[in-house]
Amino acid sequence: MPSITGEVIPFYEVDVTNESKVNAIFSQHTIEGVIHFAGYKAVGESVEKPLMYYANNLMSTIAVMNACLKHNVKKFVFSSSATVYGDNAVPFKETMTLLPTTNPYGETKAMCERILTDTAKANPQLEVTLLRYFNPIGAHKSGLIGERPNGIPNNLMPYITQVASGEREYLQVFGNDYDTPDGTGVRDYIHVVDLAEGHVAAMKHSKPGAHAYNLGTGKGTSVLELVQTFERVNNIKVPYKIVDRRPGDLAECYADAKKAYEQLNWKTKYDVVQMCEDAWRYETAKQSVLISE
Ligand code: UDP
Image (cartoon, rainbow, N blue to C red):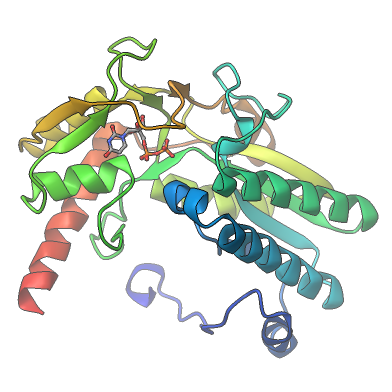
């Protein structure tokens, strides 16, 4: 967005599973590195449509990597996910053996990591960085860009903002009988701007081989803690009801964030207070745009 970055970036709308279209773009530019974000990301949908998820997420990664090899692009940063750790003990650390993931979405991330690691082994000039995202929330401070899910949100923060704005009646808290301090699920929420800066750091510090890094704060926050923080900092009520656990959810998921700090010289700057403020600023800005449309 030029009003945020001050730069106009060429934009092409193509299906990145289409290798010849990807190659055509690579031919028009000198590309120093690629950050491959594209992919389907809804866990529930991946359980219903596994082939769609495997085809899209794997073929896009293969096509973009093939284009990199063909055009001699060395740096490749991949959007992976904390879900590749499976049900390991927290905090999740990059040296851990990955355990089975609980859904096809997570499996596509684990498989892409393996595909890219093998490709880096076979092509020693490649610098592959696998970024394992924890739970990105919040929005840019300008209120200009943020999360706008289609239909009913799957994730916690967009659900909270829609309940706060009155668009939905109440939040369903999925389980309060986990083995956690208040019984609700614990996650490592990371501000989207910190996450974005993690990619810049990854590009700057990339090195030959394939290297995985956690992008998280290292701090766990429960569902009820997040709801209470949101209510307090924005001075607004978020009605909720406790309901059954959501199948496939882990009790706790948070990062050991040391490796990214030591090797990428990156750490998070924002806490859940700012994440809640920024998410709400975006939601209210979005509401005024919707009203004027
Ligand atoms: N959650 C919840 N109600 C919702 C959505 C999520 O209680 O409507 C809980 C969920 O069980 C988990 C946490 O919030 O403990 C984060 O879920 P989210 O879907 O945002 O991310 P995930 O960690 O599943 O990738």
